Image (cartoon, rainbow, N blue to C red; front, side, top):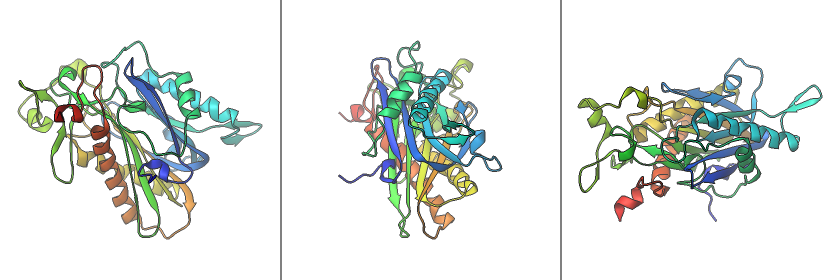
Length: 324
């Protein structure tokens, strides 16, 4: 089977924990041999763990896992389970007589969709890491994308399902670049190639999708308590041999991919965070201009794949539901 997801990169494994009953979940991206890590946090409402260690000028240059989770700040606990799992496998940074797995994480807000009392915890993170494989990644309403929604300018009751999506491409040099994105944006989602509006706020009878940007510029806004109920999070990865500075550049430029497919993007209501991972499995000449362009492309495509693959949940319709 052709693998067109992030696990096409040798050394990358992904596992999901999905709770459809409570509309939440988490996704674990593992690199058991360690990957050079990077991160770029944008938007006004981020929730993260172990991001400073990935920035240039900090001593640790390898990350063993990135966890994407629902549950808002509570969901950061999922990463603790991944740390315990990796420690049990003797995977991590040697620190004296100890092994310390480096596990970074970002969360999205899905508490308004299902049962707000149930959030991904340490046990769920461990479950996802134990299920991680190199098989093609399941996309849509799974893992961190389970309770994700998009297009909330008219309130979550008029939003559409987001989800988690992945995409991959291979450059002429043989280097592979891929992404995995959990899409939970305040803005709507467009097909960045055709400019077709795929998902966004629903209005009217029968319901139809409206453009968030148009609503915003016409003066539509959410009440203050709805600020920070969003966030798109993800990973862009490659098998190229990159420095920490170069991986941080990939994380940085990948946000352009979010901006291509999410309209508007990086708002005060979102805490968009992108991680970078380089497994360094392939030794080849690196063209960082081409690498950056590839990171943008796979990120935008993963956003589109996320909403196209999603299925309706908790009364929130998906793209496929509206097509019926």
